[in-house]
Length: 219
Ligand SMILES: Cc1cc2nc3c(=O)[nH]c(=O)nc-3n(C[C@H](O)[C@H](O)[C@H](O)COP(=O)(O)O)c2cc1C
Image (cartoon, rainbow, N blue to C red):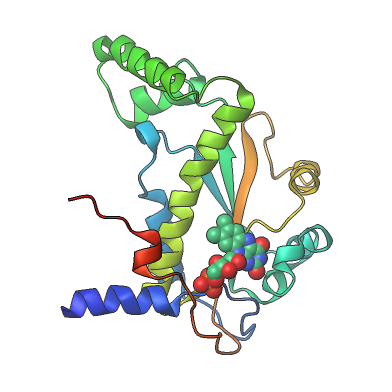
């Protein structure tokens, strides 16, 4: 194995779902920015980046979802950085958001926009993405998990620990964030949380199914 291959496999073995972090240690601004960049630069279906990363550093605010977040009991208080990833709602070709992305961000020429819209519509229909609001939101949520994975891998490459968190009452957290004025419910919904920091204790050895159990080669 090359040095790069070793580094990658070591990072995947290093990463574990950290239950408690050493609260005295902080991630540097520069390293945390690298983690955020690996989220922002992640791929997404149709390149529509249906996400927003909310970094919750305010201690009082972090405490609020604690009683409705069973999966974040040790992480909310101790993580150096805590991120809530939001998924964008109603990501369809004619939406103001997609129009902004195509015209202002990606700078598509005005003449090419109708064909792009048609391509997006056909794909979303064929893949049952735009059957209803729920299927559209689930599709956006899937994209946020790609960013989640990339952020955790980048962190591990920097010897930074993390924990993905789905263990929360979705409706309760939605209401809480909305009441706090953090969540624009018309355009976003909570997708997944992720805590970053430095482990307090060593984890148990990693257990996974074998390659033979999960990989099938057709030759
Ligand atoms: C999407 C997702 C959500 C998860 N939610 C939680 C959670 O709420 N709390 C927690 O402690 N672990 C959570 N986990 C961690 C998993 O339980 C863990 O990744 C799995 O058991 C494998 O262990 P390892 O990551 O330490 O290798 C989550 C993992 C994923 C991928």
